[in-house]
Image (cartoon, rainbow, N blue to C red):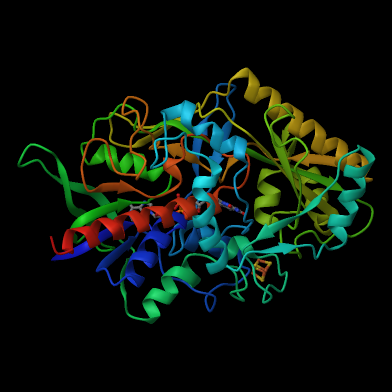
Amino acid sequence: MTEQFDVVVVGSGAGGGVVAGELAQCGRRVLLLEAGPHLTSADFRRWEAKADHDLYWPLRFAPLPDGDVLTFLGGRCVGGSTTINTKVALRAHERDIAKWHPASSLTNERGEPFSLADLAEYYDRVESVLQVRERDDWEKCVRTVQAGFRALGADLEPVMSYTDAKCMKYGSCLQGCPTDGGKSTMNTYIAMALAQELLQLRTGVRAERVLVDGAGGTPRASGVEYVDAVGGRHTAWARFVVVAAGALASPVLLLRSGLANPMIGRHVGLHPVRLVHGLFDETQDAHRVYPITAHCMQFQTDEAGGFVIEASTLMDPIAFATTARDESGPLWGPRLRETVRAYRRWNGLLAMINDENNASVRLGADGRERYEVDFDPTEHARLDAALRFSRQVLEAAGARKILWTGLISTHTQGGCRMGDDPARSVVDRNCESHEVKGLFVGDASVLPRTLSVNPSLTVMALATRLAEHLEMAMADETAPA
Ligand SMILES: Cc1cc2nc3c(=O)[nH]c(=O)nc-3n(C[C@H](O)[C@H](O)[C@H](O)COP(=O)(O)OP(=O)(O)OC[C@H]3O[C@@H](n4cnc5c(N)ncnc54)[C@H](O)[C@@H]3O)c2cc1C
Ligand code: SF4
């Protein structure tokens, strides 16, 4: 099958869903390609194993130098990770964005170092589409741990979140929201465009490579080759291609398309997370709440410690049982049985640290992805401090036993850095490849440095900015001379 579009977008998550939805609303002919299925609130059940199979990429691991592994989690469905995430909606800290110019010489359209103010109007738009609101409706389990924070001279604040009043606090955000109270790009940007028949969405298809036309000297993207669920190979031609397959997959797609910029796949940030659990005497039911209503921001900046703690959150039983560990490693036998039997008495914190973008994604000689991670001493110090503080909070709140998980990355960022300096970045300030004209990257991989907060709102703000840029470029092409 061969067709012509204005724009082909690969990946329907935080980045791709926004770019596709915005451009479709402008009347552009947009094709959105998504590797996963199109499931909606009518399909979502709190059935952990089935959701893991239907909505997620199979687990991917990065080996750590100490023999342990870091686990990557990401959505593979329409809406991408926004369909299965916890919907915390935070603007970046100005110090996060202040790291971008030194990293890649990124400037705004006036040539000034890129700053938080350059994102303000795009944050406003995303927050309005997603109906972002404050969550101060804390349940008992949050109050329990708040006492621990206060005992240590810290405190919790309500988070902002893209959940509306339909949120019934079922706690099944990681299996897809059954009420549509939780917003994703699937039930907002994409649903609106599909309802108005403005967007072509193809699911269960894997983009294999971006087609690059070298005729005329300057390489230019001309379309995308993709494979359907039964192995059929197709080409979609387009004036512009937007790669938004997520920070692990976008660099790999560019490499498979023959791009050679050595920065592709470099400077990946993991924003590593550990869940830390405390066992209390009383029932906590920390699995039956909107998972993250509160956070402690006291240590957010690098100078203050470089970590953020979110509360309260407890994984569903399979993930809880298979990841819980202590000093002697994962639990087995009677200890595991005892731990799971007390499931309703466990309460949990999520500890995430600022990182230094030291990881990378590359293609091995066998053509498969390889992830390389090596934390530097600063990152190790933050990881230790975040775990120590979380333990102290839970103990001060009355926990009798503490368990934690290994390192997890759900907020992977970087790998296709945006910047003005082609020697230190992959795409320019408009997210267009330095190497191939008409090829744009529109997802978490463009962040030059990892944020200290959950990144999806920033990914969506950057995607809104990219859609505006593409719309202006297309309008200029058709404007009378
Ligand atoms: C469990 C979990 C909880 C999270 N909680 C929060 C939170 O509370 N707040 C927050 O801000 N962030 C959260 N995040 C992170 C946030 O969801 C991501 O940062 C954001 O979605 C990244 O956007 P993206 O567009 O880069 O990638 P994604 O949203 O992951 O979208 C990428 C899409 O591309 C598709 N794709 C990949 N390869 C191909 C291919 N070759 N062909 C076609 N399609 C392809 C994937 O299937 C996927 O749908 C969470 C993430 C996870 C996993
Ligand atoms: S807690 Fe709220 S947002 Fe999450 S799945 Fe339940 S209803 Fe949806």
